[in-house]
Image (tube, rainbow, N blue to C red; front, side):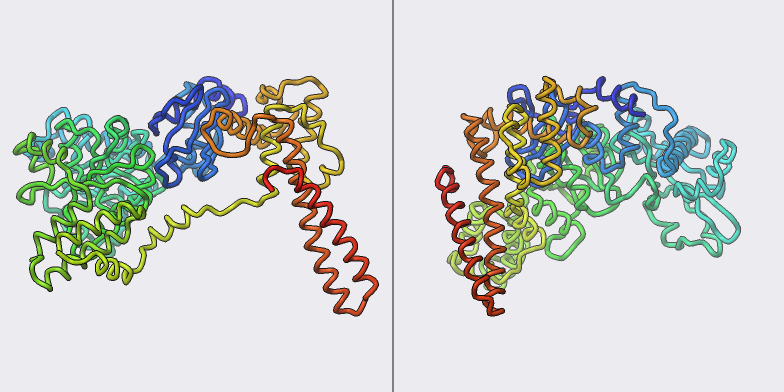
Length: 607
C-alpha cells in the first residue's frame, strides 16, 4: 500500500488538486487562497508545489494531498485514497475496509437503481411522466444529463430488478430504496419522477422523487405514514453515503462555474436547479428539501464567499431559511437575494421568460437592502407603530454584522428612513443579544495564544530547516530546556549534518525521520520561505545566526522564569513553616536567578 501512496504522490501535484476546490492566487513559486476550513477574508491558506504541502497560517490546518482531500471532503483516509488513486490512474490492490466496502456497495446499488429508473422513463408506463417533464420545458438533453427517471407504480418493481442483479432485500433497505413492512420489503418510491442526487465526485448517493401518480396506501405495519407516502416530494433517508444536511443538488456540476464566477445561485427544488443550468446559470445548486445548514456553508465557502439566494422567504417570522441566512452572515458570506416577479419559482419563470430570469439574477440585491425593502413595503414608516415594526425586523440583522463600519452604515440608513436620531437606534441595538454566530466569530477573531515554549521551539526549528548547521550551537544546557519531541528532531538534524545529508531534500530522508517529523519540517520550511518573501508577519530573519542565538536566550529566560515562580512558592512554604534559615537561602537563590534573567533580557532586542 505504501508504494501505491507514493505512486499517487509522484503523479499528482497538490496545486492541481487544491485548485479543483479553491481559487488560487500565484505568489512566487507558491499559491494562496482564502482558507476553506475557517472564516476569513484575508488569504492565509498557502500551497507549495515544490514541497507538496498546504498550510493555513490562520487555523493551523496543514498536510499533503491526502490530508487536504480528507478535510475538504470530510471523509476518512480510505475514501481519500480511492479518490486520488482514480485521479492518478493508480490501481489499488488488497485494500478492504468494512466501512468502505459498505459505502461502496450502496453506491453500486444506487447506480443500478439510477439506470433502472432512467430506463423506466422510456417505457410505456413512464411515457406520461416524460411528457410532463417536457411540458415543463425540461429538455431531452437535461433529462439525460441529470439522469432523471421514473419509478413504476408497483410494490416491488425496483426490488425485483435489484434481486436479479444479486442485491439482497436487506442491502436495498440499507440503501434507503426499500422499506420493511409486516409482510416483507417493498419499494420506497412508486409512481414518482426520480431525481438522482450526486455528490461532489458525481456519484449517485441518494434519490428524490416527485409524486406523479396516486399510489395505494401503505401496508399495515409500515414505518412510513400515509402523509409521507403521498408527499409531493420524497427523499431517501440518511444512509452511509448520504446526509441531507451536507449534500447540495447539482454541486458536482456547479462547482467549477461558481469558482470562475465567484458566486453560487441557491434555489430550493430539483427542477429549479435543472432549469437554471439549462438557461445557462451553471453555478446553481439546490438544498435538497432542507434548510441551509452550517455544513452546506462550510462546503460552499471552499469555492466562494458570495451567495445569491432564490428562496421563498418570510423574514418577519422565525423560519428555517432565516436561520440559514443568519448562519451565513455569521460565517462572513456576502449574501444577495434574487427577487422573482409575481411569486413565481425559478423553473416557472425560466419557462416563461428566460431573459427575465437572467435579469433577476444579475439584479440581485444585498441581504440588507432586501430586508429594508421588505420591511418598508410591509409597514408605514410615517407612523410610530410602523417605525417600531420596521426596526424590529432590521435591528436584529444589523446586530449580526460583525464589521463595525458596515454596521454603522446600516444604522445611519435606518436612522434616515425612520427620521430618528442615530443615538436612539444604538440604544435599541444594545438591547438585542448577540447571536451565537457573532459570539463564535468574536472568539475566532481573538485567537487563543499558543504556549510560548511551543512558539519558541517552532521558531528554532524553522531556522534550522534553512540553516541546519546552526544546530551545533545547541548545547546540553539548552537541550535540558527543550521538549522531548523537538529535542529528538534536533538530534536527528545534527546527525544529518554530520553525515553531510541535504535537509532540503527531506523526502529522501525517510530512514532518518518519521512521517510526522518530515511533515513538520516541510511545513516550518514553507513558513520560513513565506516569511522571507514577506507574506507573513513574524520575527526578523536578516541575520539568522543572531536570531537563532536570541531564541536560545528566550528559551533560557522562559525556563528560568518558571524556576523563579517555583522558588517563590518554596519561600512562602518555608516562611509559613518557621524555617527561617531555609527561607533566607532560597531568597538568595531567587535573587541570583533574577539577576541572571535580567542579564539575559538585557541582550535581547524584544525586552
